[in-house]
Image (cartoon, rainbow, N blue to C red; front, side, top):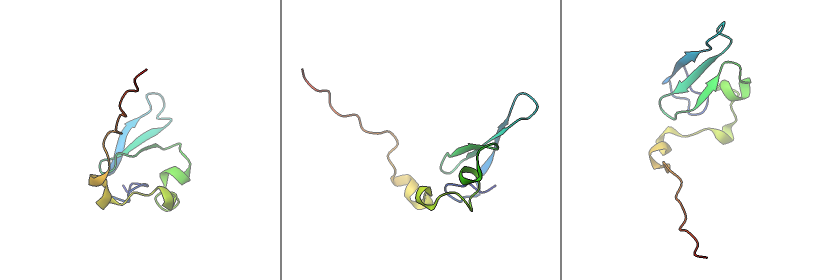
Length: 75
């Protein structure tokens, strides 16, 4: 399965809805993007996912893992 955000082929179904399989959740093991089967195509289809939100796999190791915390202000 192709990830809508990074276009890698490491996406897979993570879980089904507990009742009547009303939805499924998918997860990409490369960029950790997740989406539901009930999400609109703009969020779930690699062909229609907005290009401005796409991630280049080569840049993933350069991304900050945790946002920096600014120093506390003295009162």
